[in-house]
Amino acid sequence: MSTPVKTQPAIGDRIVHKVFPPINRHTLALYCGASGDHNPIHVDLDFAKAAGYPDVFTHGMLVMGYLGQALTDAVPPPRLRMFSTRFVAITQLGARLTCEGHIAEFVEHDGERCAKLALTTKDENGDLKLAGEAVIAL
Image (cartoon, rainbow, N blue to C red; front, side, top):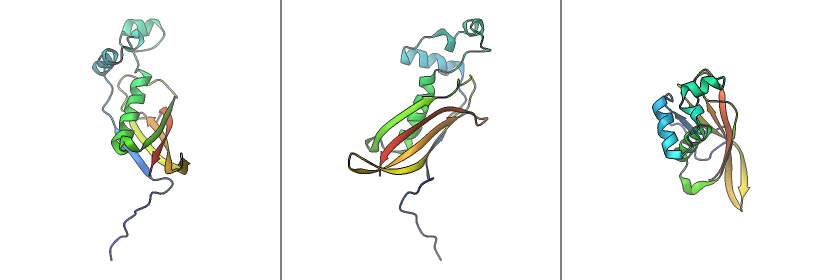
C-alpha cells in the first residue's frame, strides 16, 4: 500500500527552513561595505564596549536579509505578494540563525488565493531575533 501524496498545503505546514553559518566579523565587515551601513557598533570592538556592549553585534538588516533569502529560496519570488518583519532582539556575533516560515492562514489577496506565512528567525539557543509575515500566491 502506498502513502497518499499530499497535494494541498495545510495550516501549520513548514514552507521556509534555512540554517545559516555562524555570523563572524568578516561577514559584518562585508555587510558594512555592501550596505553602506558603517555604524561602528557593528565592527569596532572598542566602540561597542564604550557603548556598554560586550562585543559588536549584527546589523538588523543583515538578519532581515537572511530571512528574505530563506523565504525566496523556498518560494519563487514571482509568488511573493508581501513580506514584513519586526526586529525583536539584538543578534550577537557568532549567532547561528535559523529562519522558518509556517502557513498561519489562507487569505485572499487582490482576488488571488494565497497563504499567509508566520516567519521567525532564531539563534542556536532558540531566542527570537526577528518575527514577520509573508503572503504568497498558491
